Length: 407
Image (cartoon, rainbow, N blue to C red; front, side):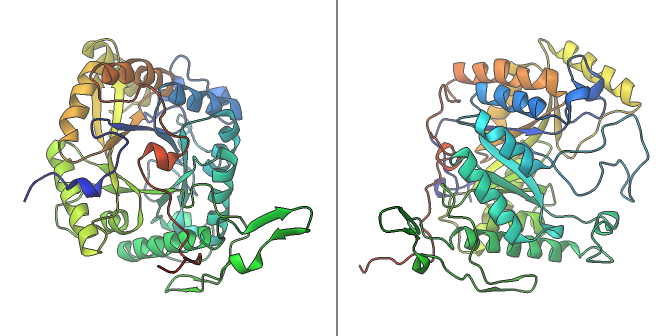
């Protein structure tokens, strides 16, 4: 069997083009990034800070940005808050931040993170549908699960976290409810006819009548169908041993449009792509497009020694060497372009880059890496679509409840 997935698994605007996204989190992914020159720590909780970051990403023609979020304070401890005062603690709500930024941008996709474990799919469906309306078709959603008991204690719904597999099963149901609610309004349900006084056709709103182990939702939504029909749903999966039946990989395979995989090298990426492809085939979805992006943390500079020195300086400020669930790249934009093209042969359609220090590494991506990839003919020179689904080469799906004409 070929190590690369069949063409039907992935869709892109061009068979030669890479897709690029950036994961935004505070001042960057290194815990000492907020102490770097230009980090603007006093503005981290302002709309302008996030608008500027997304504007930079859009200037680089990136497909989309993701906004990190959680329902507990950041912590270096698995048992709860770590009490540290030398690292960023606290975040703005990701969905609300994306909605604030949306009117200030025109092309780039906006993908906030939502924790399925402690949220209701009805609420999330209308929030993301609203974001899609506000952005005119550029919304996405990154679903994550929550395992820490201390996070569960914020809500009081559960005394202990769910087993890993069950958490992902719940997340799959969460996504299914969201998708059905998005379809619960037909595209033409709103009439808006002032002369006749008819605003809506109630026959084109539908009960979804979802009954599952974790949710029982009748519907319909209170928000009209999103411009994209179905905003793009994404999720992340940690690297695992090939064939281990990873619950996260199963969620990506069965429920998402884009999956992010955290791997260490091209061989790891190849193994992850193979496992996810097999799971998708087993679910009968092999013909449905799915993008797989590798997550990669980056520290970029004009030469490799300068990048190494900057990362070492950040490590010294943090009092520990930086580690990550992803591979960590330290070097030049040309060297990173080489790596992306190499890893792409594993069957990846794109990459979600995590800037080590946002003030330095985001411009290095948009003003250094992107021109380098353009020179190599593997990245767009202009936005070619007005919606996030369009940028990713995904068709706009028909509503599942809409009446279809007889064949």
